[in-house]
Image (cartoon, rainbow over all chains, first blue to last red; front, side, top):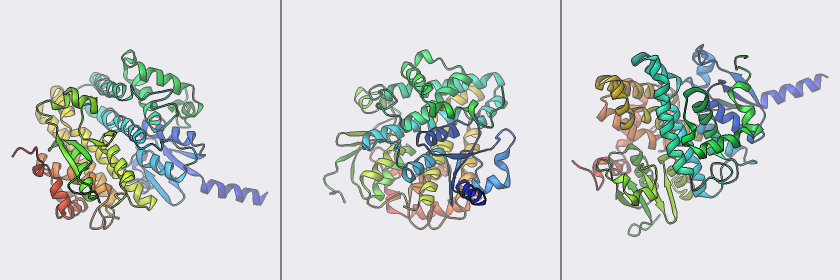
Length: 226
Length: 218
């Protein structure tokens, strides 16, 4: 019994830890990636609304106070793009980037449209600014405008490359970044998905993947109960 | 090293685009020669049918390497790192590699998009010209505070030690822009200031600067 307990403790210490907030789309990307790669992890919630990202413990891990943060033994990685690339290199068994350099570049480009052109313009801090400087009613139209602009770009980018998933027929990085943004657009910002047939089709494909569904905000330990 | 007189890479760039600057700097650091093709964003050359074929999103930079066409500075830089591994811009140590990617993301996601022209233009319509400038400056400073915190224990001559890496490639154009366009008080950011001074001394950096480009208008 004692040996089993010690073994379990050792396993727990060696387990990946993910600091995440249920609603953070950046955290959502990494939850998807971990699930797709079949990697077990301990979920450690950081309540952004309560300011838990400013606690001394969390600041030690990530002085900027962002989620997600991945802890893998001695290594601490922050930022969803950096974490993604770290996982790709350290755990290559289920690759999420194609080996073809051009297709790999397309995945990164699609991911960056989400992470640079869309998400930063509709995150909590910016929406709070819009609420204060313009009006509470302007928040959703502001976010909707930027999301739809980015979605238009993605439709154009992916139209000649999409197969069953964003780029070809295998789930890859682009999908892990797209899925959370599409859901946020639909559920929180009234995005008119009729304008985006390819993204609509991809969203349906993602809804059928258990790895994606396990990662959705509502299924996380820190999601408020219904 | 590629032959100086026979560049096979083509870079579509605009002299003032900080995203294009990142790629120009990386190409110089790696000793890769390239043909510079100017895309005048003010004249709308990004909307020509020829350019649209290369990048339907109408952004610079775009890299053409034989049959391969790549857009987005981050995607281009990761491609260059893999295809041309000389003078690596990412350290092999996983922690330091991750840190470089994180810095690059902070610049390309948390800072640059919040002060790019299209964002500010839209914001100006909603809040007015003074307020949009304040928004830009506030977000640049917020990002710089974050970078300062992140790098203060690891900074050497450059961002993550004594070699120029990806973090420097992303930060150099951002700091240049902050000082010239937004008059940010860099004395608040001693590590970033130190990094910037080191980078300014590099010929590769100077040659990549906007003023040195064929399409610069002085």
